[in-house]
Image (tube, rainbow, N blue to C red):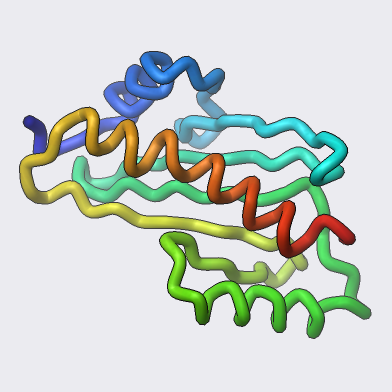
Length: 137
C-alpha cells in the first residue's frame, strides 16, 4: 500500500501494463494513441505527478478547433461535462480540446488501484471522448 507517488513509479506501472510511453521535455509521461479509421487524429496522453500526491492525467488530440466551429465544440464539451463522467473537457485559448482527470493519492491505496483506475482507464476513456465527440473535426 502506498500514499505517495512519483513519476518513476507511475512509469513503472505503465511499463507493467505494457503501455508504450516516453518522457517529454517537461518530465511528464507521454503516451501516444495513433489515429485510425475511428478517429483521424493522434491523441497524446500526458501523466504528471506533483507534490508526491497529485496525479494529473490529460489528453489532447492533434487538431485545433477552427474559429467558425468554436461554439459547436463548446456545446459538445458542455454536454459531455454535464454527464458527470470521470473526465472533464475544456478548450484552450489556442483552440485545443483537452480532457483531464486529477487523482489525489493522500490515503493508502494499492498500486493495482492506480494501475486500473488511473493509468489503464484514462487512455481508453480519452480516446472514446474524442472519437464520439470530435471525429468530424
